[in-house]
Length: 198
Image 1 (cartoon, rainbow, N blue to C red):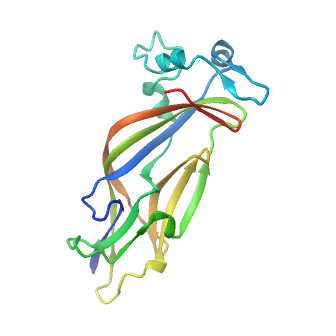
Image 2 (spheres, rainbow, N blue to C red; image 1 turned 180 degrees about the vertical axis):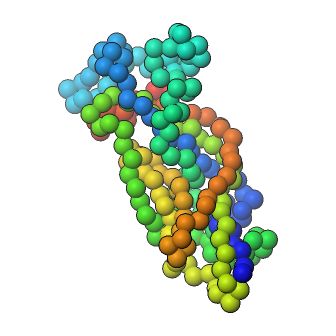
């Protein structure tokens, strides 16, 4: 059997991948009433600086709004952003990839995730850098065939698109990695509105 490595990121497995952890929680009606008003089109209006300060509170006794500590329980997905390359090579032969294409060129299973569309929600996008790869095996006499590769893509709030898995011949490939956070973008979501506040 021959082992192959699949990755999402740069041209070679050791090139760093850009990843995102995306999640959100619905605000309580009390929080909505306290901090928000709405325009005629339903767009949320609020003091962006105040809400930005609220998500930075670390003392649970003082927090009356979701913070990084509490909102991560609402993680909707972690994976590599789709504006990168997907590559495959025999493990240990990184200099000679057998497959290298833009993620958008690879067939994919897409799944859509939404927070409650009727509620007012806070959403975060943690931008990260690290590695994202997996391995699979083929018989020695079988060549890799790109027609058998499919990606699993999660689209969150129709705005954030990440690769969360892959299959070869319908068999799941365990895609794993590690990453370091580089920054967090914060949004308020209501109906079709996505308003960045930090």
